[in-house]
Amino acid sequence: MCNCMKELEQKFIEKLGFEEANAPVELLSGRAYLSFAVREAGKNKTKQMPMLLSKCPICGQEYEKKETPGAATPRESR
Image (tube, rainbow, N blue to C red; front, side):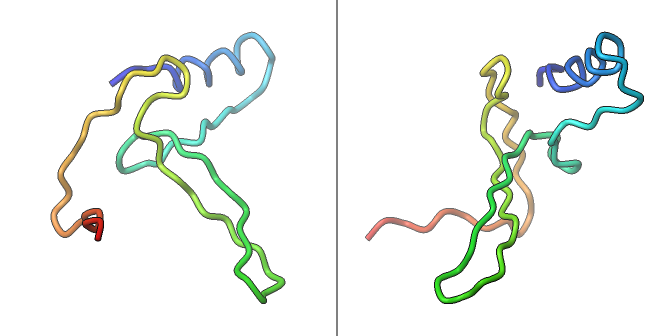
């Protein structure tokens, strides 16, 4: 697995003078994610819907696939 996100965090701290920088990385898998603001039809409240990425958004390297016991599998197309 690449180290791009950690390197970017360090650059934010060293080059831009921030005290702390936290990349959007899911803790268990180490994969980067995007967070979308979504709202269901007929409701006024929005919520955040994270989506784990399959590749590093910086270098494009695929993340290692880990089999998780009890994890949901994609549905077969009909």
